[in-house]
Image 1 (cartoon, one colour):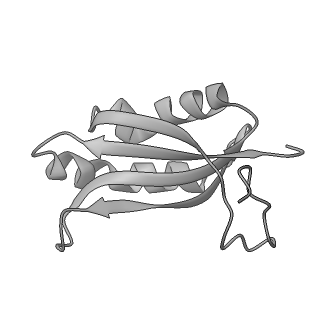
Image 2 (image 1 turned 60 degrees about the horizontal axis):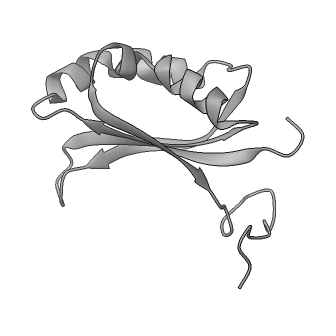
Length: 110
C-alpha cells in the first residue's frame, strides 16, 4: 500500500445486545490482530454509553487503498457476521494530528 487512505469504521450496536458483544468479543479481537491483506488496522476500541463503561459500539481507524476494501473488511468482522450492529458507517478520515509516523498534511489545509 503506497499512499494509503485512512477510514473510520463506526459500528453502532443494536439495542440490548451487550450479551452478544461479550460472547463475540474474543473472536472479534483475534480477527483484528490477524493479518489482513488489503486493510491495516491503525486503532480500535469500543464506544461507551454515556459516562458508563457499558460498550455500545465500535470505532476502528484503518488504512486501505479503497473504500471497497474497507467495506469487504468490515463485512468479515465477527461482530458484523453475528448481527451485532444496527448500522456500520464507513467514512474517509483526514488524519492531521497524532500520527506516530510524523506530521500528515491535511487534505483540506487552512
